[in-house]
Length: 182
Length: 279
Image (cartoon, rainbow over all chains, first blue to last red):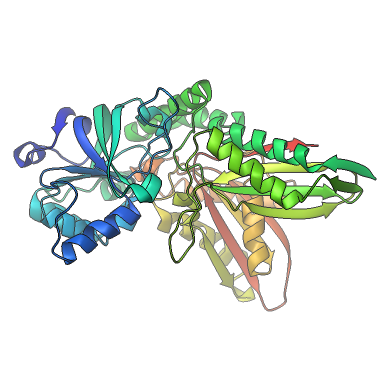
């Protein structure tokens, strides 16, 4: 089943998604990976404001290549998500609704997704050139000094994703391999 | 004695990385296409379809296959009758990498490990240089992404664990990695030597044409058996379930110490990039 959804997301819409569903995501999302997550969580711990309103937003774990002249962005596939597991529950509890990455998440992240009615999407790792065709614009909005790891606001159109972990306890990284194990 | 100007080395390094980051080899593309025909899982087939489309698009547009254009790993064989002229050959290699990553709009992914300060030009390169007979220089550029590098493991087994222990360690490394290293992977293995050389062999095995069996019949049989075991794990493309967890297993070996049995597993994502040129 394929859902066409628009970011920022709403929780009612997200409740209809199940692990294994295909999604085409349109709208505004934010890139953030290792260094940006460390800074975001440091800001929270210091009681400071985040550089963008995180409520109902989607963070894409990605550090793109520089854009070639005339392009919106360079290759822009997902990075491995588990490195953000230490930070994700805090951000989910602050209102982050969706995460896009690749690979399995920790139990605390799965709990945070259930607790908050969130979702974790898988994008295809290593398909960075193809994914870049779904990105219509990119603008650095925070931590510019981090280079590729800066937070960018992306406008995306029909970005192809798969629901990997849903808010009902479904987890494609467990159910998928179990089906084909011999 | 043959003189080679280091500018020629710089240009060769530049060309190899320009090509390696954007053009996947026919070896990998062939295996992806074959697997797409036989993969049982619908997610698996769709992922493989996207990867093939991605690789064709990247080559056509000369843009990076993957945004992780890696650390610039170079294997260099220098003929002992070669005399480098015109400057420092090490500096020339670094300059070739620097220019290739800048001109190609490749990602600068390299930073100081503790302070995490980016060097901004993807240097230093990781250079493995070896002196060989002859008067030629052969360079292999193998940009290495870290999604897969992070899933690599060194096992210092005991001799009593034997061949079965070696096989189990390799399969276990892939199982633990799950979807993280961007499967379908190429599994590079080094057996024997010392701790550091085992890993270097594992890395070097990844520069072999993907899917070509080892010249050593015993290792070739082990590669075949391990590929079957790994593809029975169910991990599948991107870890979403399926029969294509690995495209190939490559093994190298060398003698080791009576007390040891080192096994190094260097994981490589499906973007198994390597280009070679001889000067």
